[in-house]
Image (cartoon, rainbow, N blue to C red; front, side):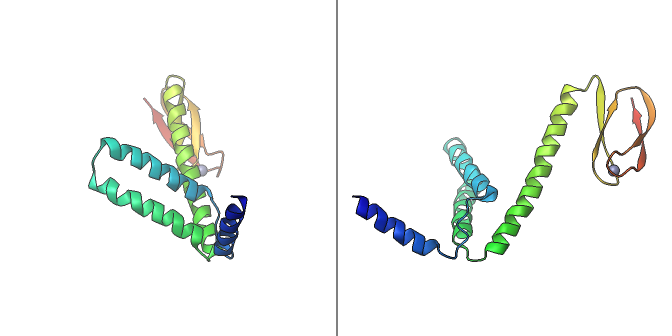
Length: 140
Ligand SMILES: [Zn+2]
């Protein structure tokens, strides 16, 4: 029994030699999305879901078996940057809703950083804490 396991592991190690083989964040998130889409497919019968689902799993397998580690790492790095921006966006939206009565959030037009301001009616000139550029806002 154990010998069979070692034989399979040896074959697997031989197959994965020189390949990317890393369950990075992009692969993990694509797998999670694949599972979510699979569950959705039980309730919503959609052609789009039926097409996207196998594409995701094929992409994960292709990324794992890829021999171009540099390119896969770059893809993951780009994805992490995109993911970080999405997480920041949703965190700001949640804060906006929670603090609506006391504060407002404005996005700097120069560097896209968010500026939190007490909700006092009237025109205000804000200094961006990130790039230092001034911009005007009007709180109604
Ligand atoms: Zn700025």
